[in-house]
Image (tube, rainbow, N blue to C red; front, top):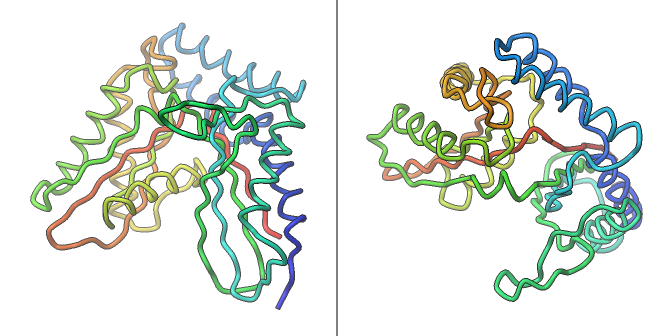
Length: 279
C-alpha cells in the first residue's frame, strides 16, 4: 500500500491550475494550424492565426489564455492500493485556492447561485472520483469556462429516436449555440446511463486527447459524422463563418434502461484546457 500525503496533492493541483490556464496543449495548437490550412475564408484563417498567437503570448508571458479561468473540474482515479494521508477533497480545494491566488487567475465561483456572493478563491471544485486497480493516483484538472458551459444541453430521448434522434439533438444544440461558445469548439457527447450519468459522460468526453477516436467503431464513425455535419453549419471561427466550427467531437457511452435514451452535449471553447498527472 502506497501512501500519498494530502499536501502533495495540493501542491500538484496548485501547479496544474496555473499550467492549464497559461499553457494550451500542443495538440490543440496543432489543430488550429491544420484548420487554418483547410480553411477557404481569409477571415477564418486570420482568426485562427490570432488564436495561435494568443496561445503563444499566454505561454511566453505566463498569463491566462482567456479572461475566464474557469470552474475547477477535477477527475480523480484512485488506485485501490493507495492510502491518502489526509482529506483528499480538502487537498484538492486547497490546491485550487493557492493556484488561483498565486497565478492571479480570476475567481469565478459564487457560494450561492441566487445570492451570487463570490467565494473569492475559486472553490469549491467539482470533483469526480473513481477507484481503479493499482497504486497510482491520476489527477486531471480541467478549468471549465462559463460561456461554453451555458450552451450545453441534456435531453431524454425515446429509444425509438435512435441514432438519427441523437444526431438531430446534437446538431440543433450546436446550431442554436452559434458563436456564443467561442468556436472552434470541442463537442463532448454523452449517450446512455441516467439523467445525471449522461451529463458526466459528456464532460468526461472533453478531456480525451483531441486526436483520438472512440475504440468502438460505430461510435468512432458517429464522432466523424457529427464533426462533418457540425462544420457544414458554417458558423466558423468565432462565428464569422468558415469550415471550422468544431475541431473534434468526442462521445462517451454507458448502458441504459430499455425505456430511456439520455443524451447530453457539453461544449468547450477553443481554450480547451486540461492537464493530467499521475502520482
